[in-house]
Amino acid sequence: MTHSDDDIPFDGADEPPLANPDDYGTGPQDYDDAPDDHLDVPIADAPVEQEAQADAAPSPTKTEWLPAKKPQGTNLEGFRTPPCNFEAEKALIGALMANNRAYDKVSEFLRPEHFADPINSKVFAACIALMERGQIADPITLSNFFERDAQLSEIGGNQYLVELAASAVTIINAAEYGRIIYDLYIKRELIHLGTEMVNNAHSGEIDAAALDQIQHAEQSLFNLASMGEVEGGFITFRDSLLTAIQHAQVAHQRGGGLAGVTTGLRDLDKALGGLHRSDLLILAGRPSMGKTALVTCIAYNAAYAHKRSQGKEGGVVGFFSLEMSAEQLAGRILSQACAVNSSAMRKGEMSNEEFERTIAASQELMDTPLHIDDTPGLSVSALRTRARRLKRQHGLDLIIVDYLQLVSGSPETKNNRVNEISEITRGLKMLAKELDVPVIALSQLSRAVEQREDKRPQLSDLRESGSIEQDADVVMFIYREFYYLDRAEPSKRESEGDDKFAERYQHWEQRCEEMVNRSEVIISKQRHGPLANIPLFFKGEFTQFGDLDEEHIPDY
Image (cartoon, rainbow, N blue to C red; front, side, top):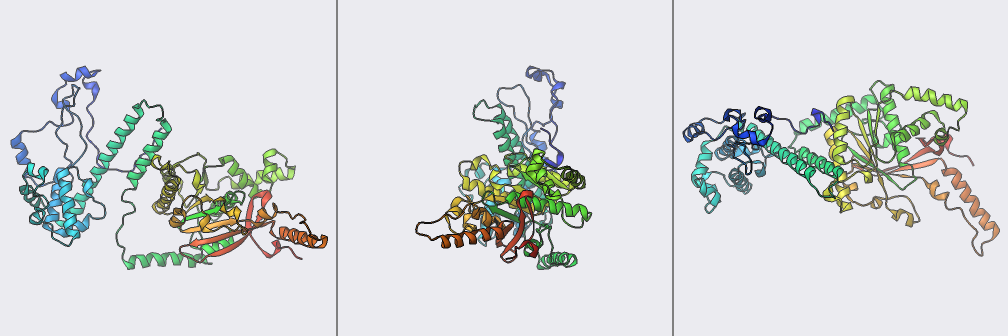
């Protein structure tokens, strides 16, 4: 499997290259004869030279490589050690002791565990603890924390705290030093993950399937890449206000209050204001309600509007179809576009006129910016990687996931379905925010709906996790009353007269006729707008949704 550079979650300074084994021979036994100057990792220098280096001012761009140690059971004179910069760590802590406000420069992203030196990690954690209690963090106040600390005593005790204070940089440079420390921590974690991947691949355990190992590695990289992404700081009201005005200006210029990506459905666009960037929208329903048909219609409408308007409306759509194949999905869209029965299209039962109409529609749709990925069982991390690649290569304005329960969770949550769904919905919300696009995810509903007389779904019917409702910005349900009417044909009851039964049967037939081409989208949660029930026109033979106009309502 190959990956582009953009798929690597972190960039930074290059590590020193490994020594080339070809310089020494073909096997480990040849390493004994290798000259010392070929080793990329320096052996510890003389003590006098080390003392001279300690007096020099630390450089924010210098990465310290630890003295090499001879590994057990090999003939190597040295080996690469994880990247770290002890001087940067000491300089940052020194700046913190000299001026506690330096912590404000790094508090958003830097944690004690990011330090390579465990002593520096302890001191940094103690500084945070003091400052959070409203106290000053300096060598004097910190000495109480370390009076009986054996590790600190071994390297000089309180004298080491004084040494840290003497290593201080100015508060202006604190953020840069913090970023260096954080970047090196990420690199060490990448090395750890890489080593873990190699060890797992060498594992002889029968139940350690290769695909599971790949999924675990993807999830680990996703977690590492996501670290710190949701951590932000305060934004001034001025900046927030300017952003709000820009969005309002876009809506005003378009007319009709539409600020997001169009769904192509007039009344739904009015209720939502379009599909807004960074929103997670859940579209849920029972089987056969038309979830996939509706979201396919939205995908087609948005992508075709983008093509027709040359990018001024609609958007580029990425469709993750975890249930249907790309061919089946394209067939549905073609059926909607040319108004030819999708079943007849699959079976070849079309008239010449219908076939010509199908060919003409396919040519018209050929360059529509709709991209389909039908890989089954993708994880959130895989979705993220592929969506990022699509946005980089073709642009991306809308993501659709069909459906949420088919997304794979991490191995850690596989034994708990509720936790797994919670992890998936959080991941999809993070994806929407990171790529700044709306994400529509389809979801199943629990069977509790079928036990009620009123079959209209409710928020409590969301299957397997309350986090779906919690993480979503919009929750919509699709409901077709005709589906239930068609399966509830009246039968004559005992002691019921013929006239009474005929009246009841006639009422059922009339209701079926009213609802046969009618569907309803129920907006049960909208973080930035009102709740609403949106009637839609539905034509089952073409799996086609549209606006419900007066001509669609039967006259009696």
